[in-house]
Structure formats: C-alpha cells, structure tokens
Amino acid sequence: MQINLKPWNGNERLYFYRQSQQLSGQTGQIGMLRADFDRDGNGFFSTWEDIRSDLKTDDFKAEFDNVINALRFEEDGTPLGGRRNLSAFLSKQDGSLLPNDGEWHGYRADTDKYSYFFRLKPQAGDYNVYAWCYKRGRLDDHMARAEKGIRFIDSGYNDKFTISDGGKIRIHFSDGTSDEKTCRYIDDTHVQFGDGSGAYGLQHICEFAERLENIGAAVEPVTEPMVMLNARYYCPLKIAVFERDEYGDLEEDGYDLDGRYAAHYEEEIKELLKKEHSYDGCDPKSMASYQDNPKVLAAEWNVAEIRGTLYGVINVDLAAPLSLSEEKELKAWITGQNSDGFGEGLEQQEFEIDGGEAYVSFWNSGDDYFIKNETEFRQFLNNQSMGGMMF
Image 1 (spheres, helix red, strand yellow):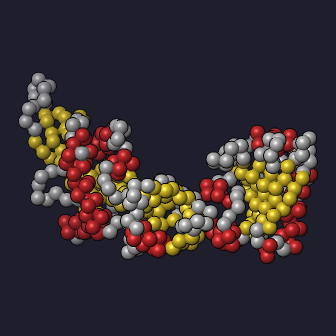
Image 2 (tube, rainbow, N blue to C red):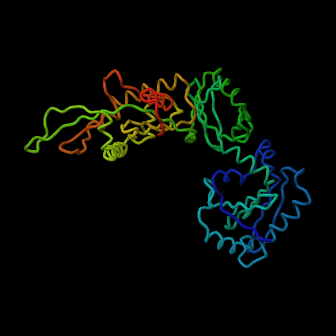
Image 3 (tube, helix red, strand yellow):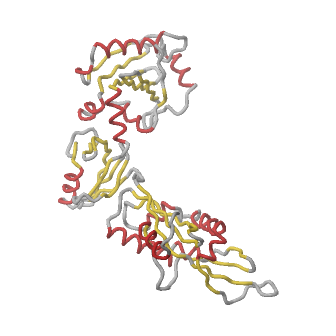
C-alpha cells in the first residue's frame, strides 16, 4: 500500500488536534492513535482513543492498520520505522513544522475514503506520533465551506469584517477590560469560540452581535481580516505645468491641464505614486488605518487611462461590503486625502515633461470634481458618450 505523506498546507494546520464535539461531527473525526518509539528508538507502543465510535467501521480499521504498517515496514527508511527513520525523513522535508507547536511536524495522507493527519516528532521522552483520522468526504466538505471565513455582523445583519477559520477577535468591554477569542467556523451563521466551552462556546453570529450590543461591548479583529472584495473609486486629475524659458529655467507661472494631457505621462505618474506609497506610513494598509471603518483593509492610489483621459483610481480592499452611509464617509475621506493628505504629498513630486516640469493632483476646487464608485463612474462615461464603454 503506497502512502503519500504531504506537509500541511493552509488551514490544514487546524486539524492535527482534537476537535470539539460540534466540529468532530462535521469533519468526521473518527479517533486518534498515539505512539512512541520506546527508549531504544525502534519500538512502536501505541494506544487508540475513540472520538466518534460510530465511524470506526471494520472497513476503516482494516485500512488504518494497512496505513500504519505501510509507514512502518514496507520500505527501508519508512518514517514510522523508528526514531532514526523519522529524523531522516524530516531532515529531507521543508515547511512541515506546525505553527506555535514546538518541534511538532504535520503531514496529511489521503485514501479514497479517509484522511490521516500525522503529527510527528522524533525526540525521545515524549510521544512521537499522533494520527488523527477523518472521513475524507466530510472533512473536505467542511474545509471547503470554512474557506469563506467567519463573518462578524451587527444586530441588523450588516457586515463588520470577516476573519479566516482559526483567526482571533478581541472583545472590548465597557469597563475597559478586553478578551481575545480564537474562532472556528461551524457554518455560515455559527461560530465556535475557543474549544466550544465556557461563557461563549457556540454562537449564532447575530445573537453574538446582539449580546455585545446589550452589554455595550465592541469587537475587532486581531487576525488580519480577509479581503472579501475590491472596490474602485475614480476622480479627475489636474496637471500643473511649468515650462522652461529660453535659458532653461522654469517659468514662475504655470498653468493647469486635465487628464487628457496627463494620459501622455501615465508611466511617469505611476512611478511617482509607487514612490509615494513607499514612504513610511503611506503603504496601502497604513493608509486604510487613517480612517475609522474596520471593513476598509487597504487603500492604494493609482491611475488608469480610459478613453484617452487619465483618471485617478483609488483601489480599496474591503473585508465586507459597505453600507450607503459607510461609502459616503469613505468618499469624504478619500476627498480629504486627495486634497490634504496623500495627494498633498504627491503634489510636491515633479516629473519631467517635454519643455518643462509638471505636478499631478488628485484634487481640484472646480464644480466638476467628483469621487465616484465604479457603477457611478460607468454612468458618468455613458452620459459623456452613448457609445461603447469597455474599460
């Protein structure tokens, strides 16, 4: 029997341990074998613990015996053949150490019906092998659904943020104290806190939101929220142009041109933006931290040429969709950044043009200035021209 051990990947790291009763049922966690190599490093003393005895069928027991025997005896150097074999096996691997778990390594092996999660360590004085056994179909189904992450909402079902399965939140109480909780995905509307026991345990996401609101508590992500979508906001550009005189000196008085002129210098402007974002505190994640909505994860300034005109484009990563009022606040914040924040710093960076220098601005004081989302911007283009609008 050929068994292929693969180092853990992504959220597989969560399944090398005992699952709660709720999760063991959803993932089909059958039980756990643990073993040590004895004092001389060549033994294999093992014990078995049932988790879901109803899943420990004769079919499973026969296959699991074959899996263990294959990893112990079938070839020279099999990883469970002893302490020396396991050390040699791990020395040839990369990226298998489990996070925050000392010297333990994690490997997964699959057969048609079952999945085996091996937690391995060759050192003497402790168990060397833990093998957590699952019904593969149930496990894969649960893990696929859990990839969507865990939503946190308010009592009106408005999204606040989403974190990955196994991520952490921090609850701030009205008395000034706080508490961190590890979160596990149960389904799209339920979350498990910690091991599922205690004051919080298993919660419906709306009931959890109501509970916090009733006691005046607030919740924020500790683990970085998942990017659920990207939104783009558009604005017109203004270019301040200063020509050189016959002696090569810049004229004191310049003049303004719009995005049609700026389109000739798209690459130069992109280089300026890249440089501006490289400064301390100006990277996209830091820019997002200057506003108050935790749904906004990153904000990056860029430009795009559309129908011969260069427009400013602010790319925003979101952990959840914005409400109308939240988007209004975000647009106001972007306007402020364009006039007095990020954009103000950018306006001080010159770039060379034919016969002079120019400065780009994401803001102007004209009545035709706007910050539009993608839908609004497409309508704006339609109003300008009823022709094709592909971009």
